[in-house]
Length: 283
Picture (spheres, rainbow, N blue to C red):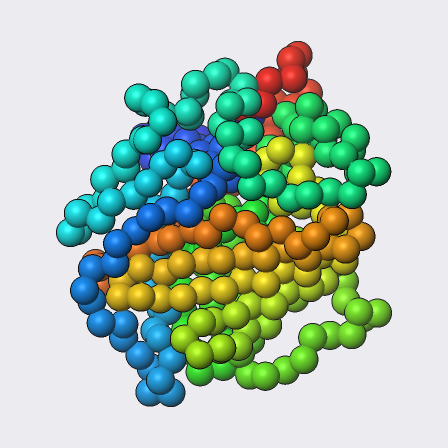
């Protein structure tokens, strides 16, 4: 679906494109990753908060995947069957539907969800080089922590979020302009960093299966560090379209121990294929 501008390093371009598609696919069925934290003390700031700064690498997978910590390496095993559901079907239907944890919509909106899902290869904003948005974009790839704000960096499409932690209040609803990321404010609850986000556009999706939201969506993210692992929990509230808040599957990421670790710049995205699609397969 998504084509990238050709670069001087063909291998790098191919890897970047594959990574972009994999992010969209894995978003369909994330589940808790059972990670055993090594006996590493959690570093703290002078204020006593856990240090969240660093480059974080993903330990993600589908509903039947678990991750086993093996020192400096991660071994992924599949409980249900040999192989992996990725590419099990050409249109990834199994991958998108195998996770039972789904947002519960009000009855009058299920037809819209199904219509978006069936036509996802043309309706999904992620396939048109649009931002994935919060919370679909997942946990950050890099965090820069300061006394007054958290800066989240995402490698896919070179995205960033600046989250104030100075105690300010949200902008009044009447003055908010809906955006892909919303207005995010952060604070600490003990050792948990909590991000409260409002003021969204309704253009993004919650997930790949046509899970839309309204402009009244309210997202609460919680990040907890234990040793060199960081757990990201999300609750989505949207009383306009959801019957109840959706508690997403937690995701766990590991700290990259390399002090020189950097994020590779993602290649520019240009959509070239939508006008030429002839089937409804989800790519």
